Length: 280
Image 1 (cartoon, rainbow, N blue to C red):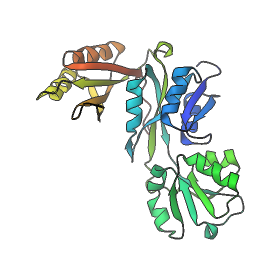
Image 2 (image 1 turned 60 degrees about the horizontal axis):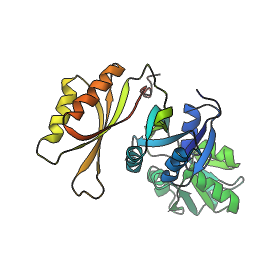
Image 3 (image 1 turned 45 degrees about the vertical axis):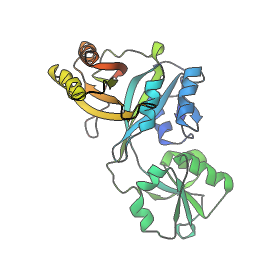
Protein backbone atom coordinates (compact mmCIF):
# COMPACT_ATOMS: atom_id res chain seq x y z
CA UNK A 1 0.00 0.00 0.00
CA UNK A 2 1.21 3.53 -0.77
CA UNK A 3 2.96 5.44 2.00
CA UNK A 4 1.69 8.72 3.45
CA UNK A 5 -1.89 8.27 2.33
CA UNK A 6 -4.15 11.21 3.09
CA UNK A 7 -7.60 9.70 3.49
CA UNK A 8 -10.68 11.92 3.43
CA UNK A 9 -13.64 10.88 5.59
CA UNK A 10 -17.00 12.40 6.46
CA UNK A 11 -16.87 13.11 10.17
CA UNK A 12 -14.33 13.75 12.87
CA UNK A 13 -11.30 11.72 13.98
CA UNK A 14 -12.47 8.87 16.19
CA UNK A 15 -15.52 8.18 14.01
CA UNK A 16 -16.39 4.79 12.54
CA UNK A 17 -15.17 6.08 9.16
CA UNK A 18 -11.82 6.87 10.80
CA UNK A 19 -11.69 3.32 12.18
CA UNK A 20 -12.52 1.89 8.75
CA UNK A 21 -9.87 4.05 7.09
CA UNK A 22 -7.19 2.69 9.42
CA UNK A 23 -8.44 -0.85 8.75
CA UNK A 24 -8.04 -0.29 5.01
CA UNK A 25 -4.88 1.85 5.08
CA UNK A 26 -2.60 1.44 8.08
CA UNK A 27 -1.02 4.70 9.31
CA UNK A 28 -3.36 6.80 7.16
CA UNK A 29 -3.39 10.55 7.65
CA UNK A 30 -7.06 11.44 8.17
CA UNK A 31 -8.57 14.43 6.37
CA UNK A 32 -11.87 15.09 8.22
CA UNK A 33 -14.75 16.67 6.25
CA UNK A 34 -18.12 17.89 7.48
CA UNK A 35 -20.10 16.77 4.42
CA UNK A 36 -19.86 13.85 2.02
CA UNK A 37 -19.66 16.25 -0.94
CA UNK A 38 -16.58 17.78 0.70
CA UNK A 39 -14.98 14.32 0.88
CA UNK A 40 -15.24 13.91 -2.88
CA UNK A 41 -14.14 17.52 -3.48
CA UNK A 42 -11.02 16.88 -1.37
CA UNK A 43 -10.27 13.78 -3.41
CA UNK A 44 -10.93 15.47 -6.76
CA UNK A 45 -8.90 18.55 -5.82
CA UNK A 46 -5.87 16.65 -4.53
CA UNK A 47 -6.27 17.54 -0.86
CA UNK A 48 -6.66 13.81 -0.24
CA UNK A 49 -5.11 10.78 -1.94
CA UNK A 50 -8.15 8.60 -1.30
CA UNK A 51 -11.48 8.58 0.51
CA UNK A 52 -13.18 6.06 2.76
CA UNK A 53 -16.98 6.20 2.65
CA UNK A 54 -19.74 4.08 4.19
CA UNK A 55 -21.87 2.61 1.44
CA UNK A 56 -24.25 0.28 3.28
CA UNK A 57 -25.27 -0.64 6.82
CA UNK A 58 -26.72 -4.06 7.61
CA UNK A 59 -29.58 -2.48 9.59
CA UNK A 60 -30.10 1.02 8.14
CA UNK A 61 -29.54 0.10 4.50
CA UNK A 62 -27.67 1.96 1.78
CA UNK A 63 -26.14 5.44 1.96
CA UNK A 64 -27.95 6.79 -1.10
CA UNK A 65 -25.95 10.03 -1.37
CA UNK A 66 -22.72 8.11 -1.77
CA UNK A 67 -24.03 6.22 -4.80
CA UNK A 68 -24.81 9.56 -6.45
CA UNK A 69 -21.35 10.92 -5.63
CA UNK A 70 -19.59 7.81 -6.96
CA UNK A 71 -21.44 8.23 -10.25
CA UNK A 72 -20.78 11.98 -10.48
CA UNK A 73 -16.99 11.81 -9.99
CA UNK A 74 -14.13 10.22 -11.90
CA UNK A 75 -13.27 7.79 -9.11
CA UNK A 76 -12.99 4.04 -8.65
CA UNK A 77 -13.58 1.71 -5.74
CA UNK A 78 -10.28 0.00 -4.87
CA UNK A 79 -11.16 -1.96 -1.73
CA UNK A 80 -14.06 -2.71 0.59
CA UNK A 81 -14.16 -3.51 4.29
CA UNK A 82 -16.77 -4.53 6.82
CA UNK A 83 -16.75 -2.90 10.25
CA UNK A 84 -18.70 -4.15 13.25
CA UNK A 85 -20.53 -1.13 14.70
CA UNK A 86 -20.55 -0.99 18.50
CA UNK A 87 -22.28 1.99 20.06
CA UNK A 88 -21.40 3.33 23.50
CA UNK A 89 -22.81 6.03 25.77
CA UNK A 90 -19.90 8.42 26.31
CA UNK A 91 -19.59 11.34 28.73
CA UNK A 92 -16.99 13.44 30.55
CA UNK A 93 -14.78 11.61 33.00
CA UNK A 94 -16.44 11.37 36.40
CA UNK A 95 -19.97 11.86 35.06
CA UNK A 96 -22.64 9.39 36.14
CA UNK A 97 -25.63 7.92 34.33
CA UNK A 98 -28.15 9.74 36.52
CA UNK A 99 -26.62 13.11 35.55
CA UNK A 100 -27.21 12.68 31.80
CA UNK A 101 -30.12 14.64 30.38
CA UNK A 102 -29.13 15.06 26.71
CA UNK A 103 -27.67 12.51 24.29
CA UNK A 104 -26.17 13.60 20.97
CA UNK A 105 -25.21 11.54 17.92
CA UNK A 106 -25.79 10.92 14.24
CA UNK A 107 -29.48 10.13 13.60
CA UNK A 108 -28.68 6.60 12.40
CA UNK A 109 -26.71 5.86 15.58
CA UNK A 110 -29.55 7.14 17.75
CA UNK A 111 -32.06 5.04 15.81
CA UNK A 112 -29.93 1.95 16.41
CA UNK A 113 -30.05 2.52 20.19
CA UNK A 114 -33.80 3.02 20.63
CA UNK A 115 -34.22 0.39 23.32
CA UNK A 116 -31.48 1.84 25.49
CA UNK A 117 -32.88 5.36 25.15
CA UNK A 118 -36.42 4.14 25.86
CA UNK A 119 -35.14 2.50 29.04
CA UNK A 120 -33.69 5.86 30.12
CA UNK A 121 -36.54 8.31 29.45
CA UNK A 122 -34.73 11.09 31.32
CA UNK A 123 -32.24 11.22 28.44
CA UNK A 124 -33.48 13.30 25.51
CA UNK A 125 -31.91 12.45 22.15
CA UNK A 126 -30.62 15.15 19.78
CA UNK A 127 -29.41 14.54 16.22
CA UNK A 128 -25.90 15.71 15.26
CA UNK A 129 -23.86 15.45 12.08
CA UNK A 130 -21.36 12.91 13.40
CA UNK A 131 -20.88 10.35 16.19
CA UNK A 132 -17.31 11.32 17.09
CA UNK A 133 -18.13 14.99 16.56
CA UNK A 134 -20.70 14.68 19.34
CA UNK A 135 -18.00 13.44 21.72
CA UNK A 136 -15.69 16.25 20.64
CA UNK A 137 -18.44 18.79 21.32
CA UNK A 138 -19.28 17.61 24.84
CA UNK A 139 -15.58 17.56 25.77
CA UNK A 140 -15.06 21.09 24.41
CA UNK A 141 -18.14 22.39 26.26
CA UNK A 142 -17.34 20.44 29.46
CA UNK A 143 -21.05 19.63 29.71
CA UNK A 144 -21.57 17.02 32.43
CA UNK A 145 -25.28 16.69 31.66
CA UNK A 146 -24.60 15.71 28.06
CA UNK A 147 -23.48 12.42 26.55
CA UNK A 148 -22.82 11.09 23.07
CA UNK A 149 -23.36 7.80 21.27
CA UNK A 150 -20.16 6.86 19.51
CA UNK A 151 -17.33 4.34 19.24
CA UNK A 152 -14.88 3.38 21.95
CA UNK A 153 -12.19 4.90 19.71
CA UNK A 154 -13.93 8.28 19.96
CA UNK A 155 -13.91 8.08 23.75
CA UNK A 156 -10.18 7.35 23.73
CA UNK A 157 -9.40 10.00 21.12
CA UNK A 158 -11.11 12.84 23.01
CA UNK A 159 -10.34 11.67 26.54
CA UNK A 160 -13.94 10.90 27.49
CA UNK A 161 -15.42 8.00 29.46
CA UNK A 162 -17.72 5.15 28.44
CA UNK A 163 -20.71 5.03 30.78
CA UNK A 164 -22.44 2.13 29.01
CA UNK A 165 -20.90 -0.12 26.35
CA UNK A 166 -22.63 -2.01 23.55
CA UNK A 167 -25.94 -0.14 23.76
CA UNK A 168 -27.06 -0.91 20.19
CA UNK A 169 -30.36 -2.76 19.80
CA UNK A 170 -28.99 -5.41 17.46
CA UNK A 171 -25.47 -6.84 17.66
CA UNK A 172 -25.59 -7.83 13.97
CA UNK A 173 -24.70 -4.28 13.04
CA UNK A 174 -22.10 -3.94 10.30
CA UNK A 175 -21.21 -1.16 7.88
CA UNK A 176 -19.60 -1.76 4.51
CA UNK A 177 -17.01 0.85 3.54
CA UNK A 178 -15.36 1.62 0.21
CA UNK A 179 -11.83 2.88 -0.29
CA UNK A 180 -12.08 5.19 -3.31
CA UNK A 181 -9.33 6.77 -5.40
CA UNK A 182 -9.22 8.98 -8.47
CA UNK A 183 -9.73 6.62 -11.41
CA UNK A 184 -6.29 7.10 -13.04
CA UNK A 185 -4.60 6.23 -9.71
CA UNK A 186 -6.75 3.29 -8.60
CA UNK A 187 -4.74 0.11 -8.25
CA UNK A 188 -6.02 -2.98 -10.06
CA UNK A 189 -6.31 -6.00 -7.77
CA UNK A 190 -5.45 -9.23 -9.63
CA UNK A 191 -7.54 -11.14 -7.06
CA UNK A 192 -10.64 -8.96 -7.49
CA UNK A 193 -13.77 -11.09 -7.23
CA UNK A 194 -16.43 -8.39 -7.12
CA UNK A 195 -17.51 -5.54 -9.41
CA UNK A 196 -19.77 -2.53 -8.81
CA UNK A 197 -21.58 -1.07 -11.82
CA UNK A 198 -23.99 1.81 -12.45
CA UNK A 199 -26.31 1.77 -15.45
CA UNK A 200 -29.36 3.55 -16.81
CA UNK A 201 -32.09 2.14 -19.01
CA UNK A 202 -34.34 3.30 -21.80
CA UNK A 203 -37.83 4.07 -20.52
CA UNK A 204 -39.59 1.10 -22.09
CA UNK A 205 -41.28 -2.08 -20.81
CA UNK A 206 -38.99 -4.95 -19.93
CA UNK A 207 -35.72 -3.02 -20.12
CA UNK A 208 -34.63 -3.89 -16.58
CA UNK A 209 -35.58 -7.53 -17.00
CA UNK A 210 -33.56 -7.68 -20.24
CA UNK A 211 -30.48 -6.15 -18.58
CA UNK A 212 -30.60 -8.46 -15.59
CA UNK A 213 -31.27 -11.48 -17.82
CA UNK A 214 -28.11 -10.64 -19.76
CA UNK A 215 -26.12 -10.77 -16.52
CA UNK A 216 -27.84 -14.00 -15.50
CA UNK A 217 -26.96 -15.61 -18.83
CA UNK A 218 -23.28 -15.12 -18.02
CA UNK A 219 -23.72 -16.92 -14.70
CA UNK A 220 -22.83 -13.72 -12.84
CA UNK A 221 -24.05 -13.70 -9.23
CA UNK A 222 -25.88 -10.45 -8.52
CA UNK A 223 -25.46 -9.66 -4.79
CA UNK A 224 -27.07 -6.22 -4.60
CA UNK A 225 -29.24 -3.88 -6.67
CA UNK A 226 -30.14 -0.31 -5.78
CA UNK A 227 -32.06 2.32 -7.76
CA UNK A 228 -31.69 6.10 -7.60
CA UNK A 229 -33.75 8.73 -9.45
CA UNK A 230 -32.13 10.65 -12.30
CA UNK A 231 -32.18 14.33 -11.36
CA UNK A 232 -34.18 16.37 -13.85
CA UNK A 233 -35.75 13.28 -15.44
CA UNK A 234 -38.81 12.26 -13.42
CA UNK A 235 -39.47 8.51 -13.24
CA UNK A 236 -36.11 7.60 -14.75
CA UNK A 237 -33.55 5.77 -12.65
CA UNK A 238 -29.93 4.78 -12.37
CA UNK A 239 -29.40 1.24 -11.11
CA UNK A 240 -26.40 0.20 -9.05
CA UNK A 241 -25.43 -3.45 -8.88
CA UNK A 242 -22.75 -5.49 -7.16
CA UNK A 243 -21.78 -8.76 -8.79
CA UNK A 244 -19.46 -11.54 -7.74
CA UNK A 245 -17.01 -12.39 -10.53
CA UNK A 246 -14.67 -15.31 -11.03
CA UNK A 247 -12.12 -13.26 -12.97
CA UNK A 248 -11.44 -9.81 -14.36
CA UNK A 249 -12.58 -11.12 -17.74
CA UNK A 250 -15.97 -12.03 -16.30
CA UNK A 251 -16.31 -8.45 -15.06
CA UNK A 252 -15.61 -7.14 -18.57
CA UNK A 253 -18.17 -9.51 -20.05
CA UNK A 254 -20.75 -8.28 -17.55
CA UNK A 255 -20.11 -4.69 -18.65
CA UNK A 256 -20.44 -5.65 -22.32
CA UNK A 257 -23.68 -7.53 -21.63
CA UNK A 258 -25.20 -4.46 -19.97
CA UNK A 259 -24.05 -2.08 -22.73
CA UNK A 260 -26.22 -3.99 -25.20
CA UNK A 261 -29.32 -2.96 -23.22
CA UNK A 262 -28.41 0.29 -21.40
CA UNK A 263 -28.03 3.91 -22.34
CA UNK A 264 -25.25 4.41 -19.79
CA UNK A 265 -22.92 1.93 -18.12
CA UNK A 266 -20.17 2.96 -15.68
CA UNK A 267 -17.85 0.62 -13.83
CA UNK A 268 -17.47 1.89 -10.26
CA UNK A 269 -14.71 -0.54 -9.35
CA UNK A 270 -13.37 -4.10 -9.24
CA UNK A 271 -12.12 -5.19 -5.86
CA UNK A 272 -11.79 -8.08 -3.45
CA UNK A 273 -14.95 -8.89 -1.50
CA UNK A 274 -14.58 -8.28 2.24
CA UNK A 275 -14.91 -11.43 4.37
CA UNK A 276 -18.30 -11.71 6.05
CA UNK A 277 -18.54 -12.06 9.83
CA UNK A 278 -17.18 -15.39 10.96
CA UNK A 279 -15.70 -16.08 7.52
CA UNK A 280 -12.20 -14.92 8.30
